[in-house]
Image (cartoon, rainbow, N blue to C red):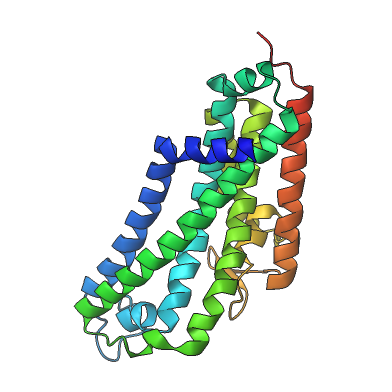
Length: 271
C-alpha cells in the first residue's frame, strides 16, 4: 500500500500524466466541436461523399457510445506511451535503483507502481467521458441538434459497464508499454516499440485477421460490442466477441506484469 500511495503521489506530479490526458481531452473536444461546426452534408448526397452528418455523432443517447468509443481508440495508443514512459523512467532516472537500495521488494515495487498507473487510467477515463459528453453537447448546440436523449435511462445504465471494459482494455495496453520499457530499460525504446506494435498490428490485421484478433491491441479494440467486424484499410477485419476479447486482454495484462516483474527480479541494478 505504501508503494501504491507513493506511486499515486509521484504520478500526480509528473508532466507525462498531465500531458497525456491533456492531449486526450484536447482531441476529444476538437472532434466533437469541429463536427458540430462543420456544414451538414447536402440533401440527397451519398453519406460517404458529403461529409459527416453531425447528428450521427452528436445526437444523444448514441453520443454516449461515440464518446466512449473515441476514448477506447485514442486512449489505447496514449496508454502504451504513458506506461512505457513511467516504466522507462524508473530505470533511466535511477528511481528503481534507489528503491532497491533501501530494501524494497522488486516485484512489489513493480506491481505497486503499475497499480498506481491503473488507478490514474481509471480517473482519466471518467474525466474524459464527462468532458466528451460536454463537448458533444457543445457541438450539438452549435449544429442545432437537440439533446432530448441525454437522460435516456438505458443508455445511462449501460455506461458503467462500458467504462469498466474500456478501463480493462486501456490498462492492458498500458501494461504492454510498461513491460516493453522494463525489458529495454528505456523510455524511448519502450515508446518506440510499443507504438510500432500498435500500428503494426492494425496493418497486419488486413492480412492475418484470424491471428491478429488475439493480439493485445486488436483484442482491446473489440471489448465493446459493435454492429459487425471492424474496418481496416477498406477490408473487413475480424474481431473477437466482446467477452472473449476481455478475457484475452486480461491474459495479456497478467502476462505483461509477470514478465516485467521477473525481469526486474533478475536484472542487475547496482551501479
